[in-house]
Image 1 (cartoon, rainbow, N blue to C red):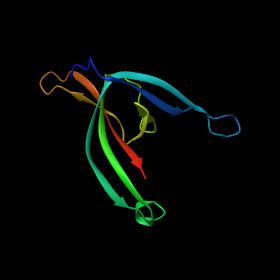
Image 2 (cartoon, helix red, strand yellow):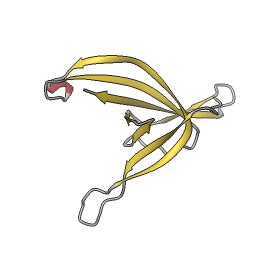
Image 3 (tube, rainbow, N blue to C red):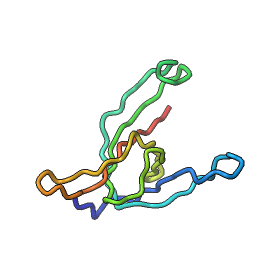
Image 4 (cartoon, rainbow, N blue to C red):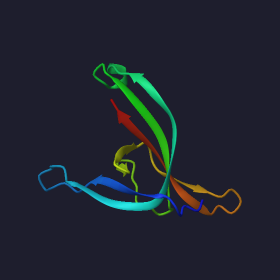
Length: 114
């Protein structure tokens, strides 16, 4: 996939902690150009089974298509045009079926509002 007119994405990651075990500060870097693809929005009633405190939330799942070699981890938070998304699972590299040549990095993301 040739991504020439995509958007730049900011990747937020927790930096290394201090010697006393405290969490590090957030550090960021940019990747791109990337494309975003979204699925339908799900309305979910929260509760203990959903990990919420009995509130209603909207979940929007999507995929980010980034250039091969982009630095994205499963624990990162991505910011696209001012909206933050959590990475769902490990990013994987999509490959052509015949040549096995890598085409792009696919990152599943989720935005939670509500």
